[in-house]
Image (cartoon, rainbow, N blue to C red; front, side):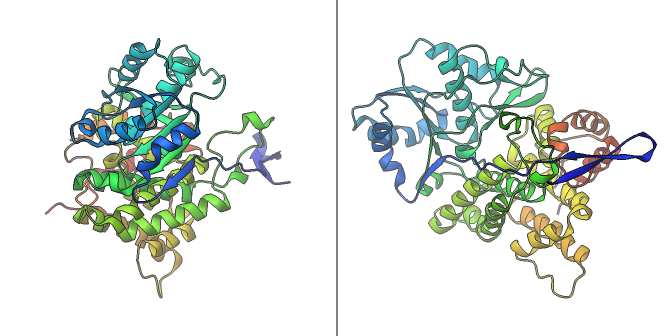
Length: 430
């Protein structure tokens, strides 16, 4: 049996059993150019007669939603629509939809859009199916931490961005603007993800860059987190956490996602009509979503939850800016993995020591960020973080232990102070 040591007073140690089991979770996925044309058929196969569409106003304006509605209605399926999803959605916005449709007769949900739409749909589906309040199911300190009673109504996720992987993740990020913080609700994975690269060609370059870097962070963090064998063995299978640690299979998904993003993100940003690049970025986003929704995330996401809540910045940009310093900090914990990341991002490591080769991963990430227009650091817009903000950010981040405990290098609050300081400026702007 795998075991880990725990130090006791006086220097003695005892061994505690660690987990020997992993359980891969992912949505059913349909992928390919034009696959959205089959959504009516898929809903019919699921027995759905009336669906609630969750989306944002921009996708309504550009006609994406109308096209999908026509496909659904061609199968004689009823449609209701809520198109008020906001960026970085708040608890109140999700509650508005719940209040509007709590008496409605629907038996399936379709989420069209980026992570904000799909995350909102997961939460809305949960509450409209089982009742209660959103905070009932959020873990403390946000909510009551109640167990979800069972499956929600079928949810079909149709991503129009390539970054969050929300079509296969069990978590929704919820903003609390009044508290200047974000929280996460684990509410189950979608029933089906429909990944059509044609739906992503309308993304402007900035959104393509931000969401693509979000996917890269998901893949890299899933690759560096501690393995599942480092976690305590749960008393029962039900007590096994959603994020179980890196496994042989999540490594495969993460490596392929990193490779695809390194190869195709620049092309997708510079030419939105490049369907090969769009297809591979959408695939990479999904692969990264599978990797991190099973293995977990750690340092970058812990810091980003606090920064995003305090400064209302897009999640993808926040992750991208915090990534270089986090990689450099974690290299000593697993240098071979960062060497592999450098290779996957196209860096040559011939003749270098392991640490020198691992450092190349930082260089590759910074160059990639510069190439696609990611802001240079936290002191830049849209953040405008000041030196005096850093102690508070560090003090709040150290509280996110559910993520930090998976980091390959243990850290304390002073380490976070230094990391935020380093992330103020990843490179000197021109």
